Length: 354
Ligand SMILES: C[S@@+](CC[C@H](N)C(=O)[O-])C[C@H]1O[C@@H](n2cnc3c(N)ncnc32)[C@H](O)[C@@H]1O
Image (cartoon, rainbow, N blue to C red; front, side, top):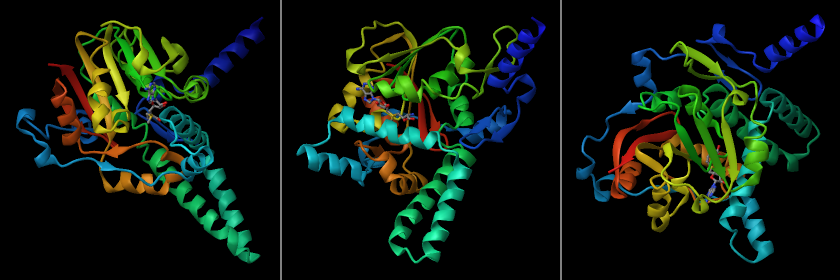
């Protein structure tokens, strides 16, 4: 009996390895970084730069220019289109993207880098020149992925996301995440505003089964302890989440959510579809609710990322934009912009229907 209890405790410790005593630390694991650092006020400013635009009514497309389109597509898209004699349907593009992106998140990066280095030495020392270009590309991708995801943590960017999400006037909010993929940001929001419910929606079933379904149970989210008001570490299995596999255009909800969230969604809709895409962030909100959106930033680092990682990432229509361009889309489509700023790889906006 005693043994069994000890074993349960050990297993619990093992599946939730980071606890209150780890708050303040960051650590690089083989496939990701955990980051439980808490911001002091000046640091908060470092992670999100606010107040770039003071009056959105004065901003025009002539001033801010148009977004940049990423058009170097993955060869898988071209091959599919040649084989099928048709353009790849958008849902199929997302299926390809999600499977490919997921492969990167689960890589043991140091092991993979050693393997490719060994193969390169082998190819060079045996004069197999034909293998060198592909190995070189793989080395570049691994180096960039290591830097972006594992060292800089620019994709999940927990400190940037926490800075963006802070200060919302909500209690036990009902959160809707449109195009949820791995669900990361809904979990970060839930940890900061616990006790409500997060509904994650993505029409690619693989996101439910794998990207979110197999999201590391041991990953710690820094949030709030509702009993003390202080910090607390949250894990995926402690959160009240529901994953729906559905098209965001089919959702059965009324105006019932305190927060509607999307991360990297609206830049995949060409301008003629943007009003509809933006409207999905309004129609399910309670009066006074918040829409929170992020889109990838137009900056040289992002252009480099989508250039080097094209084979993994570029299946879908995608724009890179400035926070001014993103804000103008939202303002033109009837939103009041409460906060706007930039985090590591994305622009972030907290808005409310006007
Ligand atoms: C670019 S991803 C968002 C980025 C995300 N943070 C990630 O890690 O991949 C957009 C997600 O939205 C989903 N999506 C796109 N259009 C959708 C639609 N009409 N209905 C439901 N999900 C959609 C895609 O399947 C994809 O998983």
